[in-house]
Image 1 (cartoon, rainbow, N blue to C red):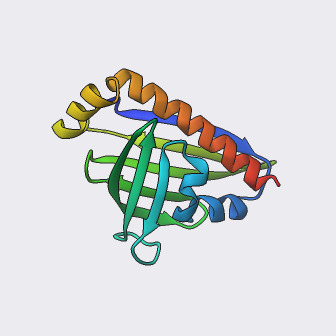
Image 2 (tube, rainbow, N blue to C red):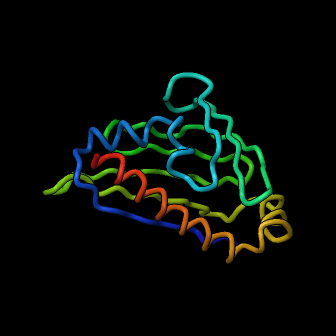
Length: 150
């Protein structure tokens, strides 16, 4: 079964406004995520806007869609993946030296049977895949940090 919450966080020596501009631009997602190759919004960035996405792991490519669920400027950006019902979010918190950025994947009620089956048969099992997701979250946050601190 999918873990209810996967989480990673990082301290960034840059103002919240700069970090917000990086994470709320969905076109940047391929720069951050080791798995995402394309994320394109089908309209303005606001709750209800859909995105089309292309992910890659090794030689395997797969399309997904997302629906933006929260846009709280300089505080939170979130989207839901209908295929597996997970919600991904970035939360920003001002600190004395800049910004604390937290990335979370929530699968409160697990994932869909289709997603669980594909993860088991194609992606090496839930535990292995979720470990890769957390590693990818940490890599992505490090990339955001590097971009924000330039």
